[in-house]
Length: 629
Ligand SMILES: CCCCCCCCCCCCCCCC(=O)SCCNC(=O)CCNC(=O)[C@H](O)C(C)(C)COP(=O)(O)OP(=O)(O)OC[C@H]1O[C@@H](n2cnc3c(N)ncnc32)[C@H](O)[C@@H]1OP(=O)(O)O
Image: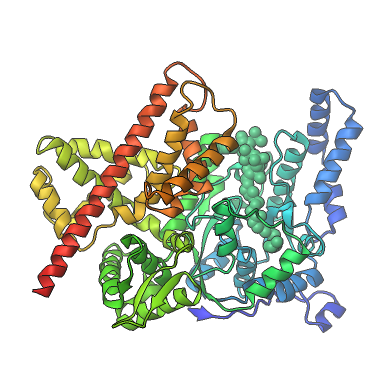
């Protein structure tokens, strides 16, 4: 599947001059940007909606129409063959030359067929500025038309803005609060694109992930598209989940510094672009592009149109489908092994000993492991490590008796980013280990099974803003399957605390502390800062987040928390979502008590996860001493 695409989007000839230069476009917008603006504004429906807005806001219709026109002019894109060519041939390579591509071509063939009778909306993961260029390059080698890509207007600077707006990029404000006129124009433009059968693309995470795993989705554009579909008849709209997983990324270093609060994000601009392009010249690995099972938005909404809850479910389903096709990569497994050992350096056989059981587990579960087959042997693991050493993520000390590897000081967040691309595959297993050990210790032989389920659901509920869990009934089935993988005799042994411990002791690997600890620790720092606010309202969320960062840094220095990657704005923000979901942010009687309860639950969870780690250390040292004798 490995190939280096040409990035050529030509197929249907356009003008003679363009043809002479080899220029063409497959889905050039039939009208200019100005004509599209006019067409939308002259629609009686839009006129009525704008009149209603003018009446509601008590202002002249003329002023509202002006705002609508200005909004639309900033939004509407065209697919001019000349500019599309610059996008593909100049901007594209500036972003993508760092990667080889590994693409699921079978899925692309199916999408080509699907595109004939449906409008496709591509919803890729967002890890790099290269993402939209990679998707464009991949689609260019198919019969699929070029997408209209919705992106933040932070990339509207000269010359980027003028080029991308004429090659299909729809630049939107990052946030538009209660600007009803702008929202209406977004909906109408989406309706226009769907009506004309244009394929669309946007990045639901609303920005590049800073942790390497999926961010919670933003729902606005999906909601507006849903509303646009209810406005008129258009082709059926099908959502296409897209996973782009990188072996490694150059820009991760800057993101990690921003995330740890060490550096402000550099504003996108011409000098930023120059340095970014320079960095991207160096090849760094493969980008894997996978397509999840398409999902009909038209069908989903037909059952309950304009329903917020429905939109949320659809978005989460898209993310679950992305997770299902996201491959396990070499760097993900290597960092999963190295981050487990509190910065102790490991020999190659030790790393192999940690990676192989994970590979075996992944194969047992039929996970997408096709890109890590080379890790079956020492040399494959060695080359995965070598690429991490080259990128300064891992240190290799080779002057002693045998080479040893550890995560470089200061590179934990980077290593965690790569580990997190595959972490979702191990979350249920991690929950099983923690709950099994905890309930067997705390509840002896009695009722371990029922208590265990309840505890597993509780932990799932705490982590639901980090991971996209299946619905409760399905989650239970998944946990059952995990239990059988842990031990064929699970349900015979689970009633007996010794049996529970024995199952864990004899498992090929334990993973809970490698997967869950950063999240539980970050949430416990947050819960502590929240609890200190007693019964009062939390009005200043940014101040709370800053406090979490500084307290977290102190705890890392004191080794009171073990994972430096726990000090993450992204994780603290998800903890805010949890607190909001549990009504812990507003002032009310008893809220202080509830906040303290969350803090105490998370402290207990840190201890429970640590117990799994201790058990793992114990059994590994026994195995080592056994093999030495
Ligand atoms: C330097 C350059 C290099 C790279 C050069 C590349 C150039 C090559 C191509 C260019 C393109 C690139 C693309 C890059 C990738 C990005 O740029 S990513 C950043 C931009 N993309 C996005 O933000 C997309 C996702 N964002 C959204 O969907 C956001 O919701 C919006 C539409 C931006 C609005 O955000 P907001 O103003 O914060 O509002 P929000 O709270 O989300 O609420 C909006 C609506 O959603 C509803 N909503 C909120 N929560 C929910 C919920 N749970 N359930 C249902 N509805 C909900 C709200 O009720 C509200 O509805 P209304 O009340 O308006 O009816």
